[in-house]
Length: 226
Image 1 (cartoon, rainbow, N blue to C red):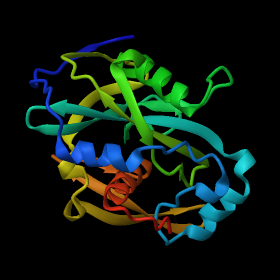
Image 2: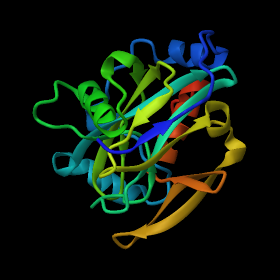
Image 3: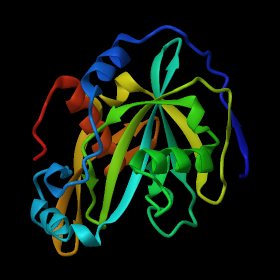
């Protein structure tokens, strides 16, 4: 572990109605490990991603925690900025998480282990409430999003080799469609669209933004995975 980061935001003991609704939507969900349950970022470039899904055995399986922190001003989502020296997705905004290792019992265990390693939040501080659709990236990762309520903290213990910084964003900001836009890049000769969310100059894009949009759709009861 490396640097410590203090959060002086006030904790909250009251339930946020938005969080309560999400809790109800996720009740009884399980990690989607079968290819038919995988989520594509957007319709554009779906051919590339469907080929990835068809090669599901070659996908690098990973899991992330979507950490929901209850504050007096409402529920926030904890995000990290990845260190610049990492091999994959260096400098990008992401959820705590990483590869599912052979010693991990399941995606939940992997997400909680990686969260403790990256930001110092112990599994005992997280109440897992469910799962979002597994997200497939054009770079060959399948990502199981594990949604958890995180006990309000004052201090994080960041692993500087993996995490440059951590910050919270209001949940209602992230799930507002007005803050979600579509961009595109070329991957392996195909143009792939993906979501972007700008928050105070921090660009949240790719898989992280796509998972957030999936969270919004789960709240709204949408079932279209493109």
